[in-house]
Length: 351
Image (cartoon, rainbow, N blue to C red; front, side):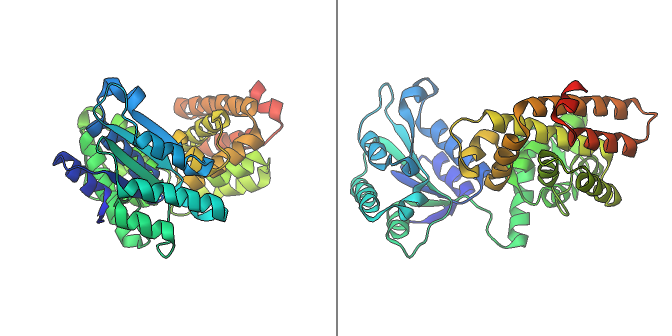
């Protein structure tokens, strides 16, 4: 079948075209989440979603169960959406399990149920292998990635930033969307988070300015707060202070940095509460992050521990209060905070 973008999928849904089977292919969680939400919205009435939306994982050996569900009419809904995640794991199974999963998929796709939209998901597939060929031939392939070309990734992120802003009732000043896309390194999950923050900051002005982006968004051009998370988790005060010095010398302002650190701590606390996720791909959706960042969040949440994370969040709040009151050297406040966060576990909790 055809290969289309996530935007083209939305247009196809608006035209009411029947789609028996879809492959969401790509590593971008934001695009995949958007496609999932649109498919559910289009095909399943809200009151029926408890019964007519089901999720399975090929990685957990649930391919046959997903196909069985796809051939079973859902209660209280004329249509259902069945998700089969982690399809790429089929390629890595032992021969017997792989062939069984392939046969199950092939049989269903050869005669799909008219009351089901089957949504297969994979981060990447080898198109030379049987699974990739089967899904390319018998599903509508929706690209859920930005590609490898930096220019194309940047352009796509800018366009999406403007679209998200429009949904929130704000516009971007000339150059502001471009700066934002560059600052977040075309990370769409973070792009959405930052626009939420910028829209709130813009308020009644309804315009996100270049200076707003510079003031509120920590740039990922040179580094990322997740580097700092690793230093805090492993209690490396000297390294963390050098990292802080580099950020300040690169022009980052203490208050936005503090906001990014607080956001990071909240994400680490969320990561400490995620159940059943053993890697970044499994945790990405729950945390609203890219898989590689979700992986770091899981690792560092385990190293730091929830009690120390909660204490650290309290220390961040106190530093925020000190900076906003004024009258103190901002660099000294940040250095004290980093020293505190990398200190003994009880120290941060005591404040």
